Length: 393
Image 1 (cartoon, rainbow, N blue to C red):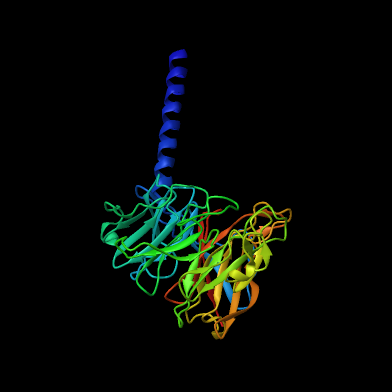
Image 2 (image 1 turned 90 degrees about the vertical axis):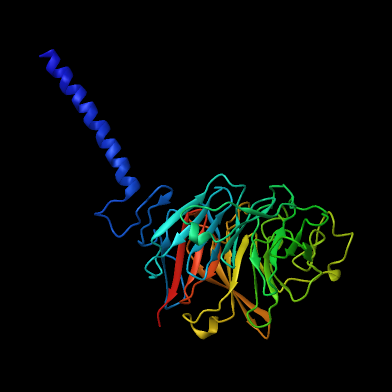
């Protein structure tokens, strides 16, 4: 009797272990009875296009849904002509490729291309190659889509950037001049800096010809070029520790090289810095095109170039506000819209909000990407997701 009890006990343990192993296999290979999720193979993650957990307020006619889930720490986005969405991260150290096989504007597969990278926040795509900006260098992965799901060996484009982690993560994009624009943030809250700190630099696609394009920039994590004039516009995060309401974040306009936007001497175009403001006058610098909310952490920005949204949105600027971290009353955690008339910023309004509930945030928008059908993707590094905003008349 004792032998039979012991045998049955051991048999139940073996069965339990088998059940656990089976459940792990199902988790990695997706449940066939679930909604049309994504099969996970190797380093792939499971996605599901269900409703957001809380309501996001949008203007009438607009809708928001998940484009992709399980994209931990999703930050900057770059879209290839064939539709592969590449996504960088800041704290996760991962690099993703998100695929929409059936072109229904709902992701079918998210591939983790790499782990353990040095804050690969910035991504850009050109001539079949993916450019990735780590803290101190820019890498290039040639013919990357032919290598998926693997990552080809990188080419080091330029490794001359500083190693400072404070404001060292980078947003990168190719400008209409064919050059790659790479910002270098100030490694401090506020301090006097020398090149390349506190600037937006640019270089040739092969890494040669590195030069400073704009100075006096504390920390920009988003920029774009006006689709008609070709002028550069960019966000900049204001300094901290001047109270809840000072200084504003900034939307800046750089129609030419060699402009200085004030940091660290002047903030928001009119506010002398308490420590450095006596050294130079605010009148010496280029003021912001539009002051934004204080401490909203304005990050990604794009001119809307699609045709899905009403005409009033065409060539207007969408800005993701990541949200304040040290303000007594939180602010931001939304998508704002800056309207332009005659190439001048004339208004600043909230377009989408709801990621902040009371004083608790469940999401933090980071970057925006206009899709070929005119919908707008939004990355969220806190929720680990990519949203899609669409419009129905």
